[in-house]
Length: 97
Image (tube, rainbow, N blue to C red):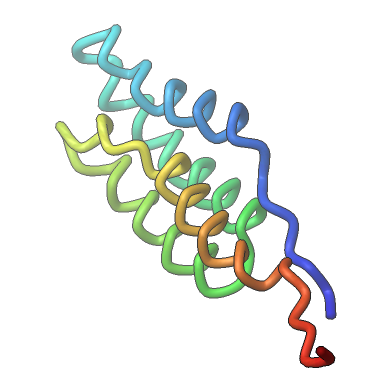
């Protein structure tokens, strides 16, 4: 069984902070979001892969494009989902008693 590795939580938090940084520059921030949205979506997909990566990448892309939604910590939420979804898979199941 191949265990999917969970991305580092610190990296996820850093990427969420980068996404929120556009609020620091009021007008230029929305222009930067147009550049950051596809970059964030690709990073999300590459980090999480599979179903979580596909849907999360699409969600991140849309979330970064819409004004006012940058506060949603999509990378951190993806880490939480990925961590808890794979947590039970890493515990070996022993049927012998």
